[in-house]
Length: 414
Image (cartoon, rainbow, N blue to C red; front, side, top):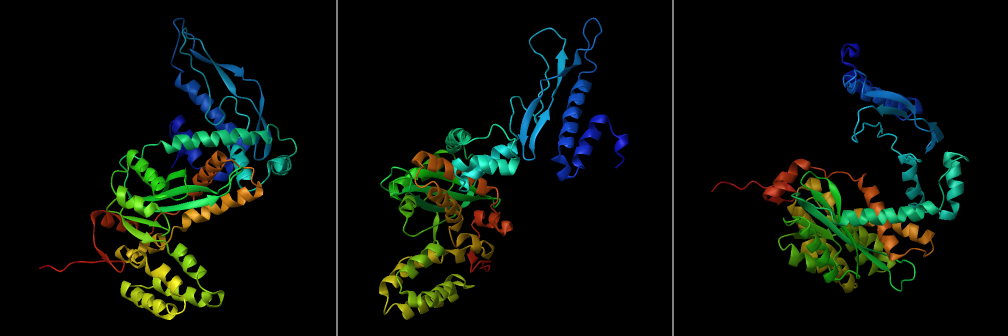
């Protein structure tokens, strides 16, 4: 494309489109963008004239110079200023989005602070860590900033908790209750979490709240809140640990939703009831069940496990047998989705970071701060969540197509 033949505004847009991402982050690039937007504003009002023929909008020097703390250190900037000669209160001003008023720290630096805190860096070590990252002249960054960030996290959480889910459809939901011990608390804090996968295969955090243990009443309140905020259609499948009070609440609120027990939790529960000497062998036999390609093969492996270990360790086998049907529900869904619906591990893996943070702070964490911090971590993790495999199967799941052993079943004509 021959850029010089395009209008000036189009040339500016094309220049931005073809600029390498690394160059876009440079100071020179940002300065060019700033001045280009300024001149675009002047060009937009070039034909606006006052009654005496003078131009309405003219350049009027610069705003006072200020320092912005960036990932490459402090940078001194000057923002050009315009003067609107037209009488009245509706004045045109130049406020670029890349350099808002009163900005003292770049967005990348603002995001650095919570990550330092969330990843285990003590507030007492902030000065040393920031000096190593941004240079000894970095200003406006101290441990006190974390106090303000905690308040911001809580405000973001309260706004998120009230958001409208609208007409969206969530086919799969994962539920789990995660425990960690905050300050001045006799019992561990239980955070109830629900993640959903929508009709496009995108995973999203749907609910996260501080519950009373994992009682049915606490889960019922969470599920009813989802309904109130727009989740009108029952999910097709729910995945979670068999010990949750979640299942009782699910049958009351979303009666048609099928149940799939988490194989990760089930394996751990069964192995914990077995002697260490046989755990490795038993783990392999459990894997033979949920890794089977068909329900028939899984049933054979299931029966083999019961016969092999049931004589000596009946309590361990009872933990497996009581959820037999719910453990094999996955075979009624597309095989492409099996890796996603076998376990609720996405929730457990994210909260490993929360537990790490609470250990580093040595108990100096309130219940409110713990919930806000957990929310912030989940939001950060959500950006990296992969979509479901086999997205082309999701419309079939919505329409109620029958699947047998992970494959679409075509009924023969009568």
